[in-house]
Amino acid sequence: MSSDVELKGPDLAKDGVAAKEVAEGAMLLGHAEGEPVLLARSQGKLYALGAVCSHYGGPLAEGILVGDQVRCPWHHARFCLKDGKARAPALNPVTCWKVDETAGRARVTGKASAAPAAKAPAKGPSSVVIVGAGAAGNAAAELLRDQGYAGPVTMLGGDESLPVDRPNLSKDYLAGNAQEEWIPLRGKGFYAEKKIELLLGTRATKIDPKTKTVTLASGKTLQYGALLLATGAEPNKLSIPGADLSHVYTLRTLADSRAIIVRAMKAKRAVVVGASFIGLEVAASLKQRGLEVHVVAPESIPLERILGKEVGELVRKVHEEKGVVFHLGDSPVSITEGKVALKSGASLEAELVVAGVGVRPALEVAQDAGLAVDKGIIVDEYLQTSAKDVYAAGDIARYPDRWTGGKIRIEHWVVAERQGQAAARNMLGEKVKFADVPFFWSNHFDLGISYVGHAEKFDKVQVAGDLRKRDAIVAYREAGIIRAIATIGRDKSSLEAEAAFERDDREALERLLK
Image (cartoon, rainbow, N blue to C red; front, side, top):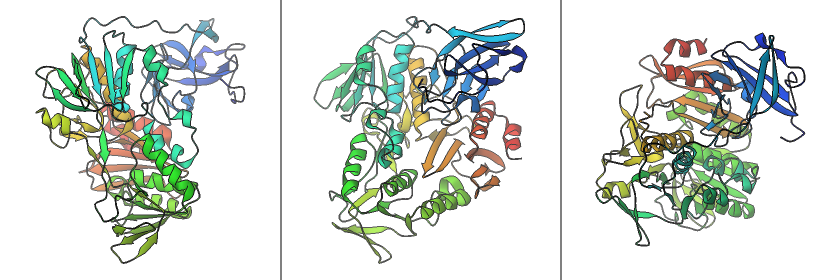
């Protein structure tokens, strides 16, 4: 921990605190040996662990405690009080500390030893092949090793880069605020140490559930005991004249983000086609790089279909205040070297064009193999496909929604990671049902939005608080039932909403709006 971290609260090593100051289910922030430390009580026992989230450095003391897990307010990472182990989106554990509770006083007495390595599971496949090295694939590979699985693990990455922190590619990295070394999820040596065979620039062209084989583009065949399909999604491309010009981009990979950055360094004007989350995050990032930025989209209010009119108008206002120019209710009809022609007859100058017009799940291999596919790969509550020992996770998986009884496919980073982890556990015979509450976050300049739940459709938007002051909680209702909650400036409320959805506690959700 760097010496410039501000330490708050009592010195838990030197002075300690009265044990009664930490009630059941409560947390207290202090410090020990120059590091922030969090005290928490669960089921009558006191625990101490590092107070800084290992994901993006969020303040765990401002989060909530659910059972034996501390949840971070920024991106909903979770850490176990007993061993500090992380749950997505965090990958690394936090330090655990020893606590002495004697004569009504609690003191931290030093760092605890690292948790022992997991024993090899009683059940497990002969080998695991993971097709896809994104959020779901990487999380699955890591969890297999964390759980003690010692069999061969092979992960195929279609891109040439190591698995990366994809949300950053349209946010801080593209804006120039994130260092290059922050982007890979792990260094190359990590995969070698964990004995995860990572084959980059390698695509699967065929899977055969009967022979349990995966055929690569090179013609090589891999045998598997269990297979995880985590091929993710591919960006939609524009189908207008000029869409194939060299200054027209989509953003999905690290290579895409790097190419846009290189072009942005030489450009003065950019046009972003599409007011999607990716499109608007790209617009904000390019504006921060000093470009003149125009956004062209057919809708009248950005993000209205997902976030409603009220939040969509706030997002537009924030962008416009920073100088982004919108051309809503319009669409491009052609692109030339220096211009984008619009359906309205307007013409926009641009040396850089980025299309953010949605993605489509990469289903070809699954379809060719005869797996059940309907707007995604159909999986059961254990994320198993229609073929034995074949699982799917992430953007491609269409899974049972416990809240509506239907099937949904979610394109969220955290959902993908948690599905990868659940699939890995099921490969090891744990029979873990995937029923996590969907969560995502989106940043627009200094406006941060957190969203929990899933409202495929809604007929009422209820705002509590003040959107203009960026202090609000927004409920999305269908026939009176709250299907999702968005928060702005209320990170703790977002965590509380997630926990309420998990318990199916509708009264708790309603209380958040009061």
